Image (tube, rainbow, N blue to C red; front, side):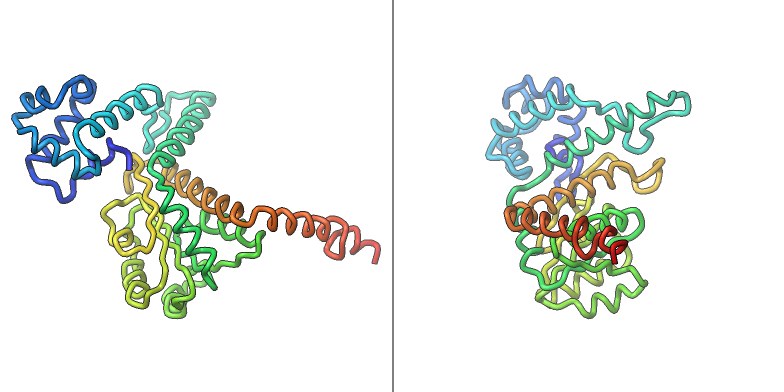
Length: 292
């Protein structure tokens, strides 16, 4: 997760630590110029408290913590953070301004998602998918559109998956998932009805699960075998559309598909060539149908 997101996600922090996080967020441009003594003086905290805070955020000490702050600050200066993920355009914007803002939102969202990726988690997710006998995709609304796109890509390399909610029988689907399968959840809020119940059942049964979410505190994330978290500046309801969350999901799923493809790159290329021949010149081509 990006350090600036960590400073906003204060679940489990003490009031003193929350104060320090707010201070750093509010005075980032100044904080990156301070040494630990100066920061301690300005926040009325001890050196050891600041070091403990940095370690709680996942850094070895103040030096690596400050380096992450410096990188975040410079990244923020060179990105288009003025684009609001909830309202990326205004009524007064003309057509090209709207187009430019949406383009910037796409770029920002993908870069932000990429910065939160973990090599280990990506590889672990791919391992689970490749070893699964069956793959079940749990996704609703806009997220189900992303799931269907992923399903379509997998099918083209002979990996077949199922949309759990396709016939409103998700509970029956969940009951039939076994420990040889893998269940993938797409829920940006991490609070989709029934999913907590499903993932608890899968956890109890030793069934592999992958969760894509934007909620670092969701029960889905805590119980998943592998979680891919992408925090975006998108509100739950007060927004024009689900731009950032769905761009992020699309990017994550395309990345997973690409990694799956690359595991058997040569074989997949050979299969692609053979199937392309079959569809264009063979018994499944339109030319063959006309000639017979």
